Amino acid sequence: MALTYKDLKKLEDLEQLYPKHILDKFPIAGKGVWKDVSDEDWNNWIWQQKKRITNLEGLGKAVKVTKDESDAFEKSHELFHMGITPYYAVLMDHDDPNCPVRLQSVPNPGELSILETDMEDPLAEERDMPVPGITHRYPDRVLFYTTHNCPVYCRHCTRKRKVSDPSTSAANAQIEGGLAYIKSNTKIRDVILSGGDPLSLSNNKLEHIIKSLREMPHIEMIRLGTRNLVTLPQRVDDALLDIIAKYQPVHVNTHFNHPKEMTREALFTATRIALAGSTMGNQMVLLRGVNDNLEIVKEVCHKLLLMRIRPYYIYQCDLSQGISHFRTSIEKGIEIIQGLRGWTSGLAIPHFVVDAPGGGGKIPVGPDYIVSRDGNKVILRNYEGKEFTYYEPEELAPKKMTK
Image (cartoon, rainbow, N blue to C red; front, side, top):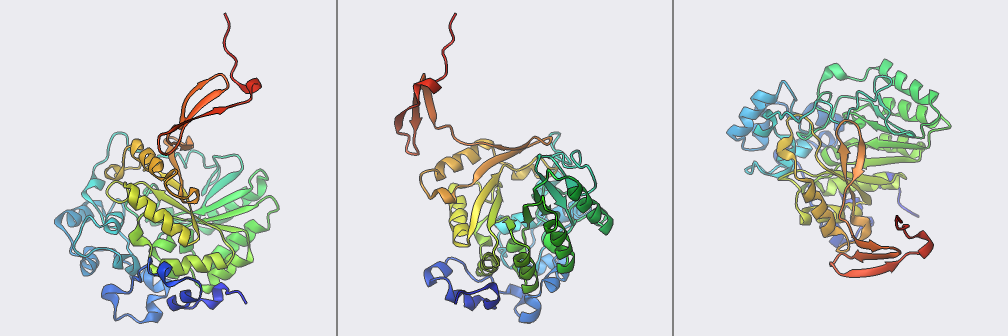
């Protein structure tokens, strides 16, 4: 009889599904300095939320805080709070301020630099908001802003104007208004629940939202955009999986940026989501000093597939305020895609996109493999740089201009 998500109760149960050489690729995070905390508390997502690191004293228990980090916290805390779950804090290197997990979660002096080109709302989400909490940009899909809260406040967040700010909380009236808008617009077929992180909501509130959407005949796709698999895998409990299984199809998009985030605990949670019937995709952000490296991206993509998560997007870092130190050149992203194409499985190659400033939407960017074109003759190059000729049907060849 096939295993279900309810059959996986602890990390050791993964041995029923995966061979040892696969499991060995995913180290157990453990509890670190929280080693004396009971398993019951550690695996309770509400305990993890309550015990988040939010000040320098707490941070000092997890890492050796540098003067730069301390100064950056003092000067940025009122603008964008710090919040790090004990689980994610365990993944940080105690002594290395350039640890990729630490760079994503601990304030950095670079955040204090606001460039003239930085934008408060770089994707113009507020402009395309017909009712509070709904961004409707593409014809058949909407983004549904459900909460201001996240387990970890990522320092590269594109929604700093909202996330971690209690004044932007999506109250019940806003949730109901969003549901009413979606119900009234039958052109919408795809809803992405976002935030913050929608899994910060209670199971009861999440079920109310998902159930309401599933009862609308025109809604085909429901997507959960969450980073909980990365920062708080304990959140995905049996009750949540019951909801996901009940209202299929529910797709889950997550956000792994570096191999250090890919633990046995994350594999456990991803496996249970897959067994509950959901497909999963990953939306990586290209971050300078974190993952702007071909081998790192390749390792992430390979491990994602082992976790049954499809590499979906690599985003060029947005023009949000105070994150210019994370930005790479667009050429770097193209270089990485070129280093993947042909050198690894097609399934392991995400789309590299620039989410156009000002609300232009996602623009795919990549290497050009067409060398030249002459009538119906097209010269192409492959991943090794070798050239090949392809002949199109003559009647489809571009017509030459005549005087």
